Length: 430
Ligand SMILES: Nc1ncnc2c1ncn2[C@@H]1O[C@H](COP(=O)(O)OP(=O)(O)O)[C@@H](O)[C@H]1O
Ligand SMILES: [Mg+2]
Image 1 (tube, rainbow, N blue to C red):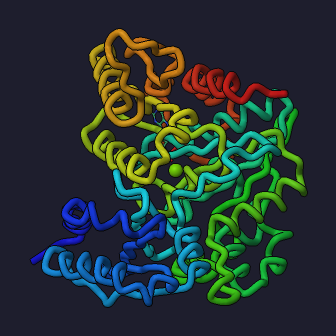
Image 2: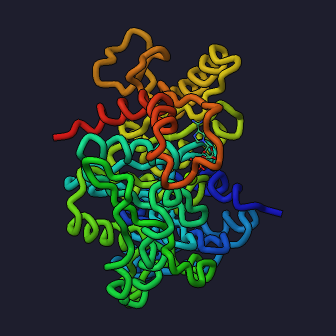
Image 3: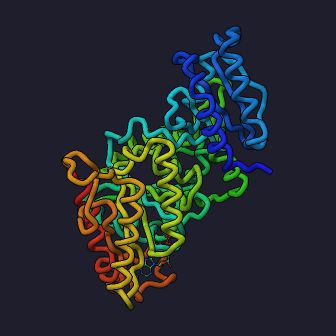
């Protein structure tokens, strides 16, 4: 029985066997399409359809793949625009050493994780708060940052993109202040071009806004409605025709532009979906954010998760672009055994970055342009910003009036002061 994981190694083997013949493709591309079920199909430009020489090479590759991967569909010769479009719209990557062979993946929500196009939004600094696991204090850190920026007089826009596990809203908005709708409603209404029905009622001003303003667009509104049913649709692409498909993150970017136009924030804080899947990865890569905060506790689960994420970015040739935007945040640093814990956290973080994302510098080489950091370099992406676990917190403080109680304000300030200061430094308010 062949499995999904055997597809790429099998393709590499077959290409190596056919390396000499591939030259005859003469710059034409071969696409290896992996469909939603994991079936493989070779696509080639229709102009090659009548070329017996090339056809025999393509057929030979197909025949060699058969038996080595789960199933191979008949070769499809398609027009070049359709082929280019399927590359543009889906996650894709080149097989190393074979620039003329591209793997295209069909995934459920068409979240093209390769798409770090316009890289960074020019309008407003965008910060994504991400973690492999929930319960690491990520939403609380975001609330603390929002509150602190507002105290400086800034206008802050907070988006709860953790639709499957909404959290940020409860600490920033009282029940009375919740808007009628949330981001999930807009994503669903937009699918039928009906976003205008909810757009005026999907954000509210937090009553924690001191000096500045904290605007919050929650995952769902006061009118929760059929939330599970809405979540089953929120991430879908909007399909006007077969050619015209707008994936959810492009739709969301349009929503963000609209919300920014309405309130002119100084900064946008995005609470991402946690874990590793195409939605959470797209929250990191497709929302034009400058700073991607990777919350981490020192556990095997955390580092395994980040390893999968970094490998994915490497496979998709995104590592060198994305690495400059990453910053590890050491979450919930324990009180006991602190020194040893920190030293492990720091070392595990460095090891992973060094192995997966930093450039290797051969000994004796000039390293001026290399993206590489010593383990002890505190300005490096792997060097964790620290947030201490504090016994003063418990679930009951997870309400929107927390910042109104003096004792809690000083607890939050002391817990998040270093974190917020580091964040202010990277934002570099103009
Ligand atoms: N620094 C901290 N020390 C102790 N408990 C914390 C800290 N930050 C958050 N918490 C608590 O941990 C729980 C999870 O926090 P939350 O911010 O919702 O995590 P996440 O967004 O990562 O799921 C909450 O009950 C919160 O009050
Ligand atoms: Mg959360």
